[in-house]
Image (cartoon, rainbow, N blue to C red):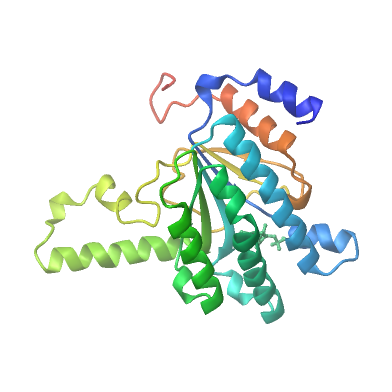
Length: 250
Ligand code: FPP
């Protein structure tokens, strides 16, 4: 811990740590361009930033950390970049899994990961099995994830259940929808962090973030450090969350 991160950690209200933090890790490409490096090096530096954020999240007691690693729209990128991201993911899972497991972190994937390359699917499934009983924190990696796709699949499932008589139209409520999303076992994010100064949601968790607090950092993702994360939590703790009511909801 640096002196700054130590004092930021101490200044946090331990009773108001967000249960679920979601992160849009943006700016890897710009980080690389600024250094005249290939974009792949930005993604590699981004992987290191992710390790730091996982560690600090576990340290302060966040229960669910969800990160947007690859969207359904990211397939539009050049083939070499897509392949590099896939190999980086496999590398992350292979190299970090023992440490994540030792820290009692459970890996969970949000999205259609089964259509990724077979070696990635195999490594992902090993990591899921190995960490399945861990309890300290869930690291939810959104992979081949798109919120519209997730909502669409949910609508299809609900329509199927109505057609075969398993569900009546009156029984379709918010809970019924939430339980069919990729995030079915997770609480909605309390805080969503986006880096690189962009004010967009980019098809991320659109149903789940209805009442999430948004915090945008000007830092490019590879430059995002534990101090930035702690600052986000500190600022979050000052927000008044009313969920549409007139008074703060604790
Ligand atoms: C957005 O930056 C980032 C991504 C599409 C990929 C996120 C991936 C990582 C952080 C790598 C490590 C992840 C894992 C799970 C191992 P961008 O490329 O869109 O940046 P730009 O907008 O500056 O071009």
